[in-house]
Amino acid sequence: MKGNSVLLVFAFVLIIAGCAALSPSRSLGTKYRYEYQLVKPDSTIELRWEDEKISIAFNVSDKAINFTLRNNTKEVMRLIWDEATIVQFGKAQRVMHSGVKYINRNEAQLPSTIPGGTSIDDMALPSENVYYREGYYSAYSSIPGSWEEQDLLPSYDLNKPDVRETILNLKGSSIGLYLPIQYQGKTLDYTFEFVVSNVIPVPS
Image 1 (spheres, helix red, strand yellow):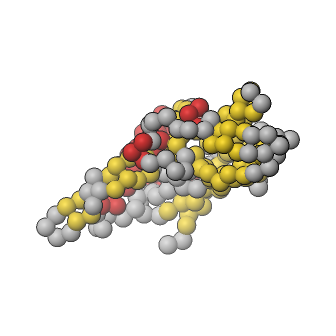
Image 2 (image 1 turned 120 degrees about the vertical axis):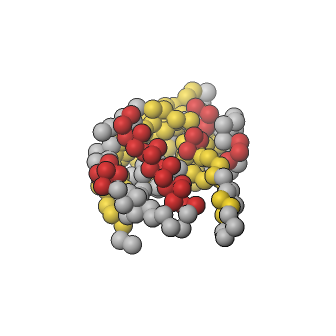
């Protein structure tokens, strides 16, 4: 279930969901919400963590890992985005963050500077999850093309029992986030791991 088989089902879900989004006659089915628990570096339900250097609070949305990062020291820190990764099903993925144009998602990204005693609000999104959706045009209706983001995990079952089973079985799966931070000339390696603690159908 985990690993390559999940990725194949996920890819199928995304293809069908993209077609459904272009055609009002296609249904995405039931939507599901994932609840997460932080298990590394320490286990906590509140999705918060801190040490003497940083404090960080997370919110894992459908498409990205959002966070507020505070520099607890009196010196400048820099978050090195070009080395940050999100890990899913054993695959490390390059990330992009807020402010980066989607068309530039695979180009070099400047570090985020965090002066001592200050915070930044940002998010990590796998750059390969960003794509350009071609438009749909017909004699009766037209939908222009646009940049879109895939979900971190499939959110809709497309009214298909096998997809529903795949989604529900994602309980217990994990998402990792690696954030390298430069401080006093050294790189601090921060790795966070989130486990899906529950998968909940969302009432329509």
